[in-house]
Structures are given as C-alpha cells and as structure tokens.
Length: 124
Image (cartoon, rainbow, N blue to C red):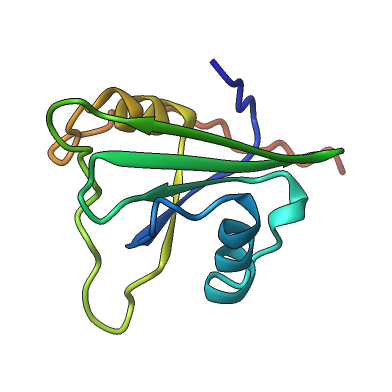
C-alpha cells in the first residue's frame, strides 16, 4: 500500500470523472480548489457512482495516482455541508482515509476529547 505518512489529506466533495488521469486531476486541484498540487498533499477524489476512488500525490519527481474500485457496495462519503459555509474540500486524517478506503461508514462516530497540555511560557 502507498504510504501517505504525515502529509495533509484533502477530500474533494465534488464528483470527478474517473477517466481523468494525474494531469487533469492536478488541474482540478489547482483551478477548482485553489491549492497547489505540487506541495506534496494527498487529494482524494470520488466518482459519481461512489464505487471508485482516486488519490493524487506529488513526490519530488512526479505524481502518484492510486485508484480503487469496489466490486460491491459504495464508498461512504462525509455528510455534505450546506449553505454559504459549504466547502469543496475537507481535511481528512490518515485514519479517516483508511476507513473511507475500507468502506467503513463513520457518519455517527464520536471522538473522545483528547488531553492537550497548555504551552508553558518560558519567560519569567
């Protein structure tokens, strides 16, 4: 499996023609999302039928394009945002991407609050 590591992961909320290859998906990232496809972020695209997914990433020498097609079932997409606050792209954690790729529905998942220590001011 392709390792995404700690790079940012972005899910495009619109539908993409799954016949598109790396260059066309890079244009979608640049022109529709207003982001730079060459910064090393991972961009996730879903097909209209929700049975296909593609992940586009740039490393130092070129684009990686991974694709997966489900034989049965559909990918569970996040609940779309509505109204003036709607976004075309949503940040995903590596765990959320893994769940999406495995077909796990997480619409009603609740996250336990994590402890975050307040930074200590080193000045006296």
